[in-house]
Amino acid sequence: MLQNKLMLNDTKTELLVIGTPRQVSKFKSNGIVVGDTVIKPSHNVRNLGVSFDTQLNMESQITSVCKSAYYMIYNLRRIRKYFDEDSMKTVVHACIISKLDYCNSLLYGLPHSQIGKLQRVQNICARLIFNMSKFSHVTPLLKELHWLPVHLRIEFKMLMIVYKASNDQAPVYIIEF
Image (cartoon, rainbow, N blue to C red; front, side):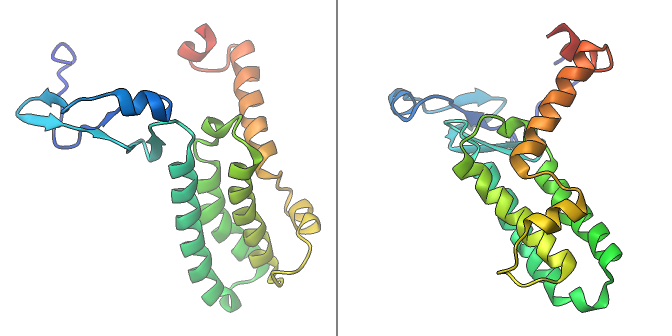
């Protein structure tokens, strides 16, 4: 870090021990010393807006995204009557769908029970755009919006990364990988 003239902010540094619950329980540490600060292991850490937990099951990330999305949906529903359909599409996409898509390639391979939480958010967004009741069927709405279901959005992103890497259109570190 010194060679690159970087400094470590010891007040923002976090320690995450990754493993199975049994492995993590065996890890006994009072922390590590960075500068004048002792950094103790955490159960959740954030990096670039993504929340990681000790088992890397991404449950904390999904919970955080859903909580933020539900809060935004609640507020948008209150002002829905002031927007036309196209404006609502733009607002929902900017405020909610972009959060569902951010770093979603990290969710690849998770069980459908986890991904289903994000799918419910997407379904509510589609109903919000078209001002439909919570009991209306969502598949035609998703088709009209040209939105893939969440698990297919994740697969699409992974396939796009592989395609770009195989055609030398990705960053060098991905192409080499």
